[in-house]
Amino acid sequence: RSKSPGGNRLTLYSNEMNEEAMKRLELESYLRKALKKNEFFLCYQPLIDLKSGKLYGSEALIRWNHPVLGLVSPGDFIPLAEETGLIEEIGSWVLRTACKQNKMWQQKGLKNITVSVNVSANQFQQTKFVAEVIRALAESGLEPKYLTLELTESTMLRNIDHSIEVMQSLQKLGVRVSIDDFGTGYSSLSYLKDLPINNLKIDRSFINNLRLDTSDIAIVKAIITMSHGLAVKVVAEGVETEEQIELLKKLKCHYAQGFYLHRPLTSDDFERVLIG
Ligand code: C2E
Ligand code: MG
Ligand code: MG
Ligand code: MG
Image 1 (cartoon, rainbow, N blue to C red):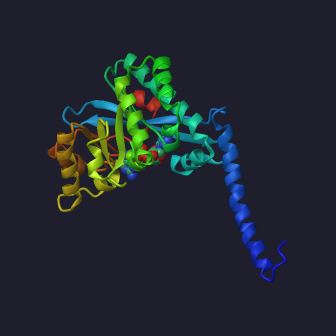
Image 2: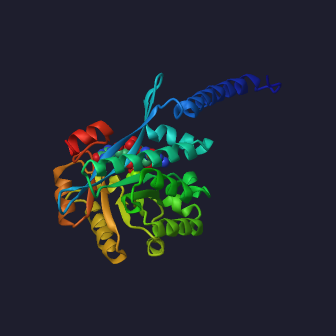
Image 3: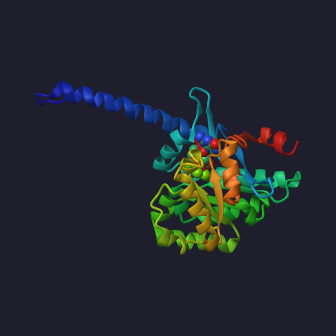
């Protein structure tokens, strides 16, 4: 197509680009239909209160089961959902489904459990976001204090003033806010004191290597110490060994989540394991 001397090369390159673009378009068109076709479901990973050993709540984690592609991990489609704007509808579905599910489990006897829902940046920045939260709570009858929204540092920092306003509205409602993947972003400690947050979730990269002889223990210890001054609770994610659990208990970490305790469970498995 190109008339330049390097025409062939350019064409080849652009064919490669087309292939990439085609794949993306295909995934995008599948993603567009996924909600209507009921291809999404939520898994729930238990969060354990380290002091009592009891269930504190769960984190809702989206799964996409596509008839051709199979199970697609959120790491592969959430970014695309963000770029295409599909995240608004998907995120709203996650929020409503998780609230309903948690209310149902409370009615089945898990009285005080909370559910954590991941919120992506574009979803959080929507003007209707707080209204969506109110709707999910109203529809499900879940008390606001049993819903925790997980935001990453980069989500909050994208527009810090607006984020603080939204977080304040959420706090007024009684909804809890947690910083996800804490320690991996630009965690300027100075802004932490201005943010209305309830929980800090230490990123699993710090927990995975947690052993008596690593510097990660110093970091985790510092975060927990800091949390007392800020009146926030700390969640350790990615706990994979007994040794890590014992260390976290010693450090007086409040809550833990990870494969050693439980993997993300389908709602059926969650009931079997935790309600019986
Ligand atoms: P995240 O919010 O940090 O979620 C924790 C991730 O760590 C989950 O991966 C979980 O399966 C995994 N994990 C938990 N315990 C362990 C462990 O002991 N070891 C290891 N290696 N991994 C562990 P998953 O489900 O693949 O989700 C990946 C990310 O996708 C999430 O990270 C979150 O950022 C995003 N995500 C998942 N569901 C949703 C959703 O409904 N909405 C949005 N916006 N994002 C979501
Ligand atoms: Mg999370
Ligand atoms: Mg996380
Ligand atoms: Mg993560």
